[in-house]
Length: 240
Ligand SMILES: [Fe+2]
Image 1 (cartoon, protein in one colour):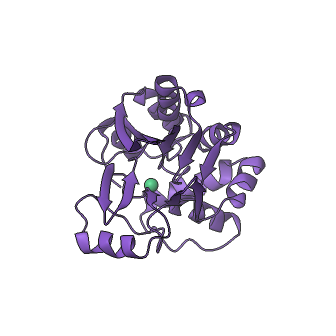
Image 2 (spheres, protein in one colour):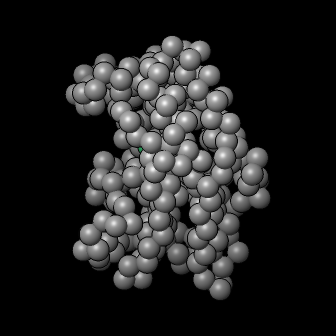
Image 3 (cartoon, helix red, strand yellow):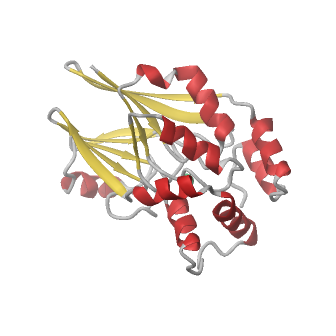
């Protein structure tokens, strides 16, 4: 049996990541899959990236926020997002990232895929077509059929929407673990999933766990980051 920890959209919320680690003990897993968005909106981008770097058996991709940070670091103009409170977080992140963590992000791809035995697993931030696309459990069924028809993999692990789901469409398993560090549904708890592959089949379980939100809020205050983020983390809502 293979046991895989599915994480994504941590968004520099290291206290949430540590709480997941304490709850689940990643050492007991064959592998960790991370669907990207390590950085931006939370105050601990270096600690978050370092955590993944320290895990030996980790498959990570870049999210759209990470890609924008890398674009800033290349000296390119940031066209989106337009809102000032978002731009502040992008520029602050690009300034505080340590060289070794920038190198690590640069080493990652926008998507990846691998085979475990005869099971193919694709890892995407948005979808296989577009890292900015956000799929929800209530997204049009036609879109899932389209993705299933063209899928080179039996399983597609995705993030970006920050909404946990598990759907099987035309035999293809679509899994989003939800956001470990920045939930939007009014429940501030960290979200993640556990995937088990065995001769009996495929099993997916989602989790929501509490974490010390005030540690994240303190991190924001220590760096004089916009107050709106403290409210967002406390309430588990997207207010920016
Ligand atoms: Fe995200």
